[in-house]
Image (cartoon, rainbow over all chains, first blue to last red; front, side, top):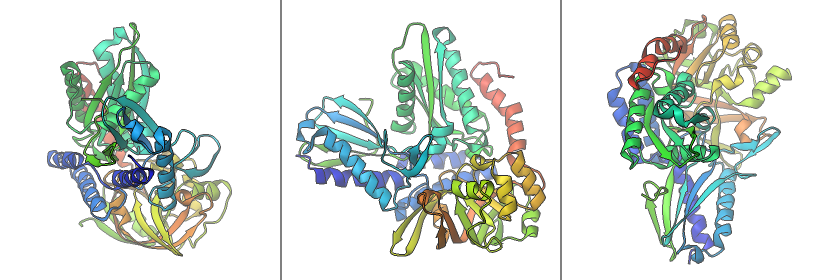
Length: 304
Length: 203
């Protein structure tokens, strides 16, 4: 049985971990960037990011004062679902309750409010936390929290319906245009991870772009070698822009580029970009039907 | 920590002597705020809720802090995108008698002119998401004001030790670090990035 109290404990631990601990492979990526940079300002910038990550993990301090807008990805193992004490809706309620408690305790910044009429900021409200679900034929639930930093989200989200005729070159140009717009003056917090979604309908493209940017480890490549090549080519080009850390010049504008695809209308090529900030707020765990928990470095959201 | 170490409150000479690209650390009294402070001071002509001679370094950031009884404990603070406050900043610089603004990214022409006219600089944070690093520089939360609309938008009077590293990205003489950089990127490196992908750079 996956009891409510077990779930509550796990959700709290995941939220705090995502807030305070940068994934190890991301810190390694900072270190490689530090080695690659020759410019003084770029080096000070990256050095600060490394120092910050170490300090945050050691003292369990939030990596960034922007603790992120609550975003979850939950793999619903069909064999584990029946073991949830209060069912799937209970899971959603637990996430809301824990998020509200952590916000009250001051450990999470209240970061959302009505888009037009503001009011008091909170982390629980209409549409927030934003929880995504997917079914999987497994005997566990995989919970991933990836609270999203506002700088990268606000300045790094773009959508365009390209045409099939625009092809690969059209995609390359679109992504590079977006990155130049987002990262100049450091708006989208470079060096960051560029998520790209191609295909689907408009909303699917953006959803894929966010999943690509948020849920894949640094250095991971798409299993389709043609898409993997596009990821490599775009990463090289983005880092050739010279925009650099904080937009202050340098060789590291992106830590990685991740692309996900879906089928789309025969004439259209929906394309979306969604940038993930370098804090890479992320924590993931599997919980089995008997309540045992296994922490994982990264989710297996894409089933591969 | 090499760089320029300054004690806050700053003097006008402190601000005017700083050069574009200087790495700066601040020790002493600063205040941290977001939107409410700007709206009240610039639009509603409200006086700052503290002595502006004592606190003249404004830090634009959210703050993660926990409370035990009457005591606040700061955990994490970084810097928010300064450009969000462009429309209010010239008035805020004048009315709150600011000598330095700590934030992220550049600001607009109105702010640049106010920096020059009143003797103030913009200090960009170095390193993205430096919340733990900057937060650990906060030695005390002296007072909190205007917390009604939530702690995310309150005004915090702080004592800080070696807050930084920051870089002078807009000085008190009309210069902007990003402009020269952006021009070089636009003319040289960004077109190269397009060519690398076999694309004609945009004009």
